Length: 380
Image 1 (cartoon, rainbow, N blue to C red):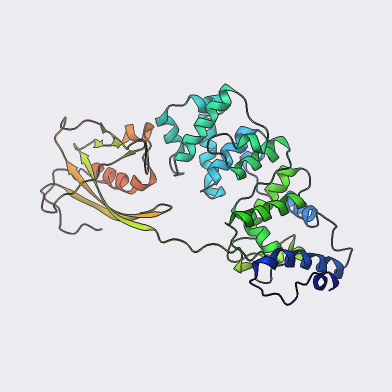
Image 2: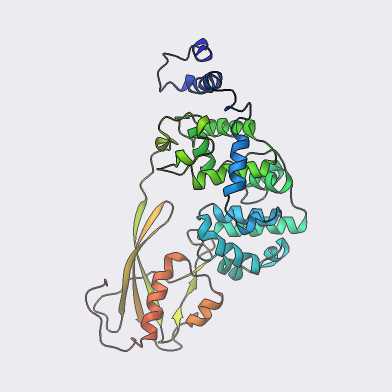
């Protein structure tokens, strides 16, 4: 207990943030002094057991089969808001369409959005293309610092590319890494705070061993498969003997989630019986540049219109409560009318509109247009 007592940490209040980092450092020293020296590695400690575990248990993913920076880059951008298991099919499709940076740089907007359909957060792919155009004209940056000059590449993505593709000793700190290190070092402070993030990044760098990219992937894989949110598999964790957290499930500390704003939305699907009207949304704002249905209001008493099932769509900061109406129009009465085949072939209809689109397609296939006036009930 000498190291822990000598610094004066004993007796300090648990919540006193001025002493928390010092306390963690002392606890690590104390554990090393009291443990069997044959079971505790010297610095970087848990790194080698972690790497051995990764070699034995990592998932076979297409973007891990080489160190091509373009592959790593695209996969990391896709994975930011999407589970890896769900993302793989989108990655394969994207790489078939855009096998090189030059192909991505030259893609037209509709093809680009269509390739990203289902992943959401379309600003990611627009920034990805902007960055690809810079790389195609110039060169691929090789360092974490340089990579962050490209649109859409932040510290995490830059660290992943720099370490995996170019062997730089660079930390790639995402949500998985924050969670793993908050538990390893019993960090009971909000991990979204810049100072806490910097502390965790410093600890990652201190623990890293070569190959650095593999170390980053191992930490992320540990967070995804073992040190998961809520119910971590501590018994199956390769680094549990170094973990200082007494209650891992309570970590990491995160800020209270802000309440999402809620909006009522009514969209009109104009149809001439076999085509439907789609319009491109404004270049800025939510779902910018994508195809969607116009907003509007109708009276339930209007003859010939048909209600579509209501549903909610959840964005990062808001919720849309969506209602839709199928509205018949005469052939030739409206521009921008498309068949389902044309839409499926090359138009990006975002997830928010997909239930409306699919319901409209079903009704058109059933020949519903032209039937008697609709029921007052607007829900299935």
